[in-house]
Amino acid sequence: MRFRALLLTGLVAPALASAQPPGEGRRSGFDFMGASTQAMQRDDALNPGMLWVLEGEQLWNRPVGAAGRSCASCHGNARESMRGVAARHPAFDHVLQRPADLRQRIASCRQRQLPVLPMPGEEQAQLSLEAFVGLQSRGLPLAPPPDMRLEPYRERGRALFEQRIGQLDLSCADCHDQQAGRRLGGSPIPQGHTTGYPIYRLEWQGLGSLQRRLRACMSGVRAEPLAWGSPELVELELYLAWRARGMPVETPAVRP
Amino acid sequence: MARTLIQAPSSVRRGDSFSLRVLLQHPMESGFRVGVDGQVLPRDIVRRFACSYNGERVVEVELFPAVSANPYLEFSAQATDSGTLSFEWEGDHGFVHREQRTITVT
Image (tube, rainbow over all chains, first blue to last red; front, side, top):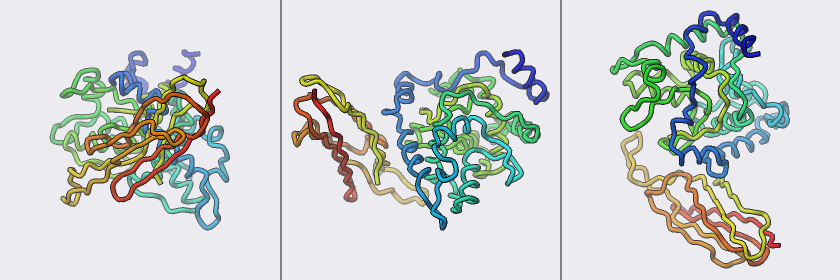
């Protein structure tokens, strides 16, 4: 079975197959955390991310717009209809005609179907919906779709991952592929697998998206962060999802 | 409206002690930070938390600016009679939030 899966990925993405870190030895950021932070993520009563999930569930069911419809009007019970959805994103969006991450998919669906205007930036409501939908995939393996249309975008994402940027002249790969497990200052460098987004980050004292995390890393190496929702960020997300494929979803994860 | 996660048992045996865990969504803005406009962000914290069990005080907590956002508290109570647990948070700018849970003692 495993052989077959490998063969399949080989067919879909010959270019990427060689650029992968070995399947063995991949570790979630969870493994790099202290015991108390791990306990915080394991226990839903302790995990502050669940507060956003709670809000997301309310938003899912709340009728809005002129037609008075909600997400639930079309998608019904999210526990069934949204199971595994977060694990498949970013995916190719037929309306936008380009890849979109989960947040963009939710926003564009709400804009078309309800209709309500998309919420810009780090709007809490949008994060809450993303966290609620993400939770329905918790424990399932990340499964980027084997969609040939995504291939050029994912390849560009990999180039971005490996490109040195900023005054510190570092690429994502410099730290998260080559130095993972070592320390930067006092903090361990994780392998950078995108298994738990949106995450509750203790440093942020709140829930934040993968785009926020990526932008924070970019300003960390003193580069100009890519714009919110830019196609380049989604390309990076695509590559990261591919890089973490098969690892279990942890949403909403807690990170230091 | 503030959101809370409360873990309280719905039934306990008489005489047993049980633990209560409460998590409140709140920014706990310390009053020492500077915003993007260069102005100091006004303090906005929860100052007091109290839990009562059938009107009797179980615990009362004072909170200060050093407490992190979304404060989590864990404490225990002893089951005497069936009744109501009430939780109350009070803070700056007239912030008040109340929650109740019923508990059955067997």
